Image (cartoon, rainbow, N blue to C red; front, side, top):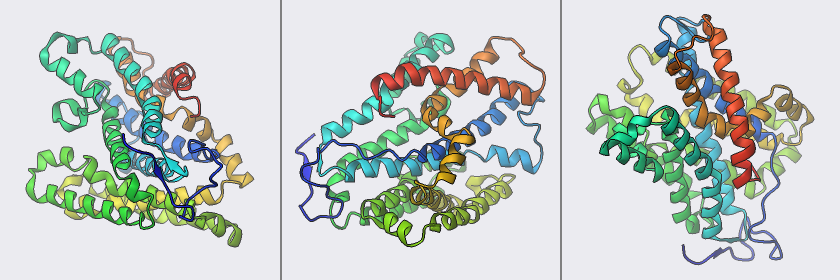
Length: 386
């Protein structure tokens, strides 16, 4: 992976030379609340989508009209995950005085691969055994093992449907590994602008050159998601330079103002998506090219607000009392297992309940139970700092 990268003694973000290069920054506990919010949004969206498809004439939340469209657009939780990943990975590259590529790669592998590979194995054995019966199936499995499944339409949503985003995340990890010298330099912030520009060019090209039925595949590839990662990266870059600490000292409640602004940016963007649903998101060039940056900027403000208010006893109490903190800690396992749990219950042929909301509640409880077990015995086994 090459030599370790060392910042000059007086470079921004440089920590004391006596500090271990691999030392971890203090964990910001309230950010588990944002992870919890992200997975809650994704879970609600998928419960509504899966239940109405697998159990006809059933609605997970009894929603119809505008409310149903709103729930189906809660896929924006994925965008929040991207912003959070941009923040955490950018910090992992910036924080140590000496960046060690092998350590970075090892941390990413232990964080993602053991839990992901086990989930793949369980789903293939318990639900999708037909993949073992054909060459195409084995090719699909191979792409998943290599984190390349998102690069083919026929493998993108197979085996574990929601896991297509893990391939995008993995591509981002590799990009940050390759670009670490630039990100750690004085003008590293220019990468944020570069990432945003690349995403605009990519999505605009998709709208011009790709047939409408293929836009949903091409637009969400890594080059089309870089602006969302970039918003989280910018928050991390400002944190490493002490901007949020100075902001907190000067305006103790400034973080609250940020959170209020989030409602304007992210909220209006979500309403915009709901209003577009009848015509289809990929029929609107402006929405495809620009709106995800708008949404990600709102989530980045939310993230910055949480960083500014990290010591607030009120915010800490909200994160604990709502359960979002606990949910955030197992969010990766929930992400991996909620769709397989839904499919396994459906394929068992057992009707647990006849009410859509009760069915959604039952599936949620089962998903959380499986996720907690995976977190306890797999995630913590390989990556105990999560």
